Length: 165
Image 1 (tube, helix red, strand yellow):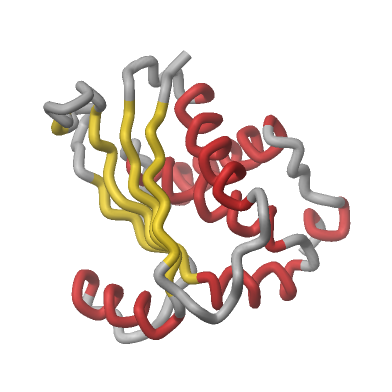
Image 2 (image 1 turned 180 degrees about the horizontal axis):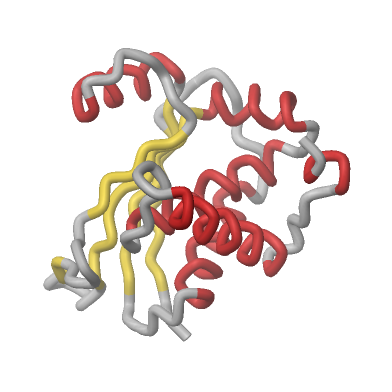
């Protein structure tokens, strides 16, 4: 089983993150790597921001002038990653989550903030590992299946109302 070092930074002030959120993010990262059979030591940075900050990042890096729920900044390509010389970990990349968006989406979809943050973490981890849902419906379906598989492992199963939306 892989071991992952998750460096978490909370740079937003709109909401005090519920207790256990950092542990949940770490568990979500580990669960993705386990599901994908990633056996190496890994390192991931997760940053919580507000909508204004994620909008700026989205504008700067994607030329899209609007806020979004999560951004992924992979450091590897085709399974090849830079290695942290201090600990030998493969540096997968950075995940940036808008807490404002997560709160709104949790409310919209009728589930907990914990489930939404876990979903965004899992989704972004899959991007760091090379998955892309933008250009192919088949890839989008694969990604959705993997997301639900990992969330189920974490005990965060969608309820039936959510599935019918």
